[in-house]
Structures are given as C-alpha cells and as structure tokens.
Length: 371
Image (cartoon, rainbow, N blue to C red; front, side):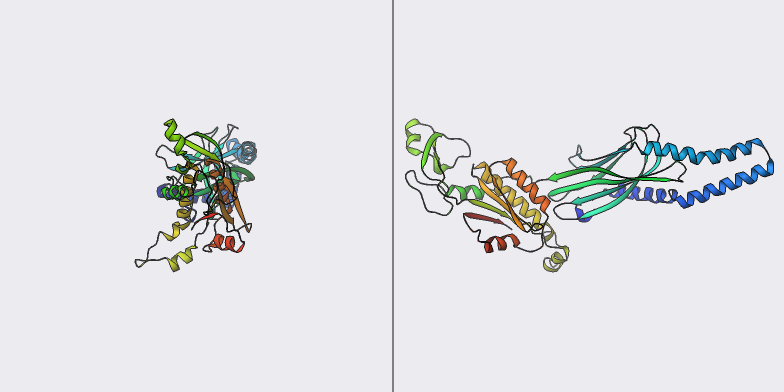
C-alpha cells in the first residue's frame, strides 16, 4: 500500500503471499472435486473387486463426508464475527489488527477476507484478499505492521468473508461490515511569528486604532493577568498602583479578524516528476507539500489558541465546490475542523482556495494563507 502511505513489513508480506498461493491452489473447488471424484470411483472399484465389508464402509464414509463437511462448516460460518482495529504498539509504531471470532467451537481450515484500505485525504485505495485458517474463539488474529508517514485519516474495512469446508468441496460467502479508522495529526509547537503578529494588533488605553485587524474596542472590565493574555491589554497605570499585572477586558467593535486559509494542494505524481525533480533525479519535498501545509496550519492555529485570539479556520472542499469554515477558540475546535478537512480530500490545482477566495470577494480581516 505504498501509494496510500501504508507499507507492510517485507518479510511478513512475503510469507503472506506464499501462504496465499498455497491456499489458492488448495482451495480450488474444481481440483478438490476432481480429487474427491477420483477417490470415490477408486473406492467403488475396489469394493466391487474385493467384495469386502471394509471397503463398503469406506465407500459409505466417502458419501457421508461431504454432507457432514458442508453442514458443520455452514454452522460455524453463520457465527463468524470479524473485527478490525488500528493499534499502537510498544515501540510507537502502528499496526492493523484483524481478528475473526469463531464462537461455534468448530475450526475452519481455510478462510478468505477482502480488506479495503483508503486514505481519505489523498484518495488512494486498495483492495486485498487475505487467507488464513480459523481456530475457535478469538485465537485467529492477523497483525499487519504499517508505516504511516503522512497526516490524515486512514480507514480500513472488511467487506466480504469467504470460507471453505473441510474437504474444500464447497464455499460460503457473505458480506460483512467491520470498519476502523486512524487519524494522524501534526506533533508540532506553536509558531512564534504568529504571536508577534498578534501582539502588533494591540490598542492604546483610551482610543481605538483603525489598523487592519482591529478586533477590540471599549474597555468593559479589568482583571488580573493570565498566561496567554496580550501584552497590549495590560493596564499599566493600575499595574503600577496595585503592584501586580492587570489587564483590560474589551468588547468587540469590528468584524475584522484573523482567517487561516489552508490550501489542500498536493500535485500529482506526474506533476511532481515533471516540475520538481532535481539534478540528481530525486525529489521528496514535492510529495510532502500537503503535509507541510497541514503542519504549518496546525502550528499557526496553536499560536492563535495559546494567545487567546479567536480566528476563522477555512479550507476549500473541492468535492462540494464550497468553502468550509469554523470559528476556532480551542484545540477541540481545531481538531474538529482539521478532521473535516481530512475527509474533504486534496486537489492538484495550486492556490485554488486563494483564487476562489479573492474572486468571491471574501477579502476581509487579516488573512493567513497556508500554501
């Protein structure tokens, strides 16, 4: 799943491929029926030749075995319960855990399940059929080690389950629904430059400024300083008198505010190869452009939140053809809007959101364009 940024361990992948080849060969219904038919005919001929009761019993047993095999497998198959989940292991790596619960207490020798994986942000999808044998209880578990390199939401689901009876003469198939998802957010510090920009939007004690970005007006209350308060809001006269930091609470007098506009731009592989390949014929930066934008937007947003400055987080949903925005005042708000962005998918047109933003006449306040 290289294109979907999920890379299985090579050794594990190799073993599963060999197991798949063996299972595919042994699970061939045509081959199984030919083998069974040959054995059954041989039993009849031997019984007719030797005329002994033992060979008659063998022939009767060969007639009954498919009936028992069919009904026992059908009974166990109806009770199978698949489960799938992303797990974080002790070494902080991520893996996909797939288990199929078999409460019937009848083991199944051969089973196949169809696994669908997808990155909602990059749109890469893959469907793979895995084969395994099923014991009883919760013992049948498959762990797929994964390497998740990029930010976004990764989904995995089992949508079809197929088993074979003990003689590999019959197969049973049913649609199932077992889904899981994993979200990877940036692990970054707030961007210090944003704190400096916010502090420049401060105001004098007695008057408003008409500077772009003005979001405060008349003083309505005073209180003690708290971490994250702007230095420009410190009431210096009272601070000097009371010998402790006092800040001013102000009411809003303008709709002008900060807007963080995230470009969900990621050039296609062909475009990366054509425009961004260096002299050595290698390029890694171009394939990480969207990842860099997400990390930058997250760092900028954290700086606003830590400074106590509400702002608008906005992105363009190319699937719906419209902007999605949210007024962010906390980390929960930020996680919410970025999760929505992950589901909207990326686009390959550079500065698409900014172009539509400007043509739509949405230019107001202080725009922080992340591209």
